[in-house]
Amino acid sequence: MENINWSLAAPLIVLQLILVITALISLIRQEQTNGPKWAWTLIILFITTIGPILYFVIGRKND
Image (cartoon, rainbow, N blue to C red):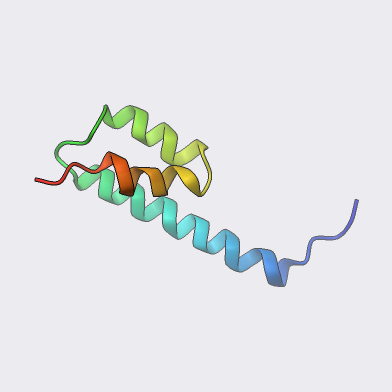
């Protein structure tokens, strides 16, 4: 097992966390979404990187 280069990995991990947190805050504030909120929560949390992006592209309902 090789050592992880944390100087490269840490910024990516931080960006991923920011993306997930931003998507979850948006989901909480959104009154209606395209699909159930519980499903979007699971997608955001468990499908890394693509899940939050999918929420912002497809899940948010524009009034």
